Amino acid sequence: MSTFTVVGGRPLRGRVRVPGDKSISHRALILAGLADGTSVVRGLSDGDDVARTRAAMVAMGVVIEGDTITGGRNGLHEPADVLDMGNSGTGIRLLAGLCAGFPWLTVLTGDASVRRRPMSRVASPLRQMGAVIDGRDGGRVPPLTVRGGGLRGIEYDMPVPSAQVKSAVLLAGLGADGDTVVRQPVVTRAHTEEMLLACGADLEVSADGLGVRVRPSALQPFELDVPGDPSQAAFWVVAACVVPGSEVVVDDVYIGPARTGFIDVLVRMGARVEQVGERSIRAAYSPGLHGTDVVGAEVADVIDEIPALAVAASVADGQTTFAGAGELRLKETDRIATITKGMTALGARVEPMSDGLVVHGPAVLHGGAVDSFGDHRIAMAMAVAGLAAEGPTTIDGWDAVATSYPGFVADLEVLCGS
Ligand code: S3P
Image (cartoon, rainbow, N blue to C red):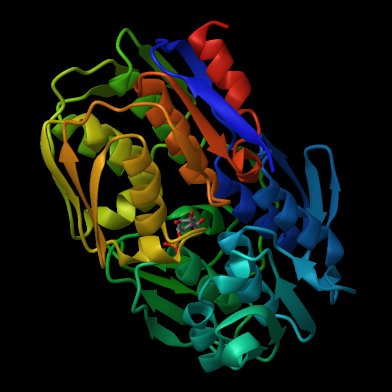
């Protein structure tokens, strides 16, 4: 297992681009696979998660050469082998929805982390539509088998705010008989709706953004430059805020619903962070940060950024609360536990709650030995904390970063000028 050592105190300065957005990349591969003809997609995420979705689509007959993706609903076929989605919860859940729409058997699995993640949230609506889904523990965890086809549209009120569940149901709905309606408790990332509309799907979003209706649709091929991933940008933005002397601009980032809430949270904490132009974010060292409360509907907007925000909270004056964030326990790791362990080892005062975290600041962070626990976002959050700490920080299990940001160290070296 690889380690990475970061030495604190060096300011980050300059401009950086982050990998193509991971959520958009998964969807681009899936929708281009369904569209009749050749799509052109530039700038896909170079992480392992997206490579898994790419391989899965190829296993179902999609042809991918360079930036071109040639697909078509009628040309897809049953995959000849198990689809191994690696570490990707998005990959396995979206693929379950996609495959439910086809009259064949798909077996989906993943690494040890994915094989612990709850699948009932997608299995349940897909079963209501007529798919036969099984798996370990009664279909609760992968490996998962999906026997699809002959689906009927349903009206589904999502019990958890999850863009993955919404997307799985919408993808299944594309091939179902009749209308499929999904209602979410709060607005979650809207990539599937945005991208389906761009492909000409028969789809409507309610005025409040909570309800989505889709009808069986043929998709048109499309051309897309995948924008940068705001969840990766968040690591550089927080690093710039907490390391003295830093000023960073992250260029070409997706700005859209439920993705950039971390900017609002940081601004509320007194950070010098702003959107510049249409797609860049500028952040500068921000002494005098203070605590804030992240609760309610805002949690879904920042769920992936809480590891990075916890670092900012640790050096902020006063208390920062992340509440109603029980979903954190169901990510690549139990992030309430892994953030608490890692940040505490570096001198932060973090109190875990059943559904969130309370961070008591300000702490003077010191270097130390921490673990990614195999979780890419924990690894990168620890690196950011290490940059703000005195002395070296060694992160075990660094290879997890390849899941979403293989070039993280190279970009860090550019920003730190070494
Ligand atoms: C994602 C949705 C979110 C997010 C994940 C990506 C997506 O998960 O945490 O990293 O691409 O739809 P949930 O749907 O479980 O909230």
